[in-house]
Image (tube, rainbow, N blue to C red):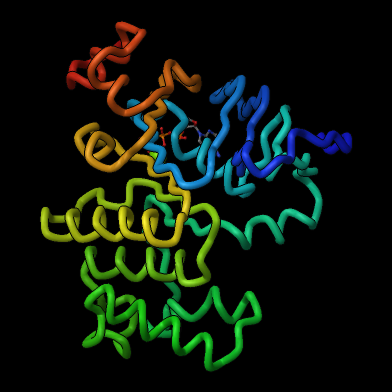
Length: 255
Ligand SMILES: Nc1ncnc2c1ncn2[C@@H]1O[C@H](COP(=O)(O)OP(=O)(O)OP(=O)(O)O)[C@@H](O)[C@H]1O
Ligand SMILES: [Mg+2]
């Protein structure tokens, strides 16, 4: 990795992240992605059975998990995964984990954290946090400690923290698992608004194929560590190329 290759860097190309021949192995190979391009302004839904490799793929996109082999490009430039430079790229991405991780601190400070880490001034930080708190209906909770929040509240705070610095890429791992319909709708609306108004590219992992259908432009179906099929949401749900995709989106068990 990191051989200095420069890819098509033209603005019309619009590819933010490209993965090429990426493999990840622990005691066995768990992920093998020949090619994946994430383009500006899109919402990608990653679906697939438990253990398929969805979270691992998201962590590789976020440069948290180094792939065993393969190439990673950010805006067409090759990224040396084991290099300290990855921090500057990670700072352009917001991530919400499958298990919500908040700091043992106030809601306000949790949201402010990423802004402080990125060197925003105190005024700018306060302005942004206040705006997000209003938008997410968290005004009464600003001073509450994160550990006292309900699941839905905590997840809204986690998303606020991940988007406060206007990331280019927002990575969400099952952000609405275990939430009630009210919070699910609220979070789906947040994601759509962020995508529309700030052109934030979103990658959302979800078990819920209906959710993917509601909010994704492109759907990536993963099974046993490989992309079975990727395409427009309409195509994946109405005329997928693969029988396995059809069975999965119809809610049938695949083996
Ligand atoms: N650090 C690790 N060491 C060994 N195996 C791992 C590690 N992380 C993930 N795996 C394995 O890789 C496979 C894919 O895991 P991953 O968490 O990416 O799946 P997933 O699609 O997100 O599943 P779920 O829908 O249950 O969250 C699983 O078999 C898992 O046990
Ligand atoms: Mg997972």
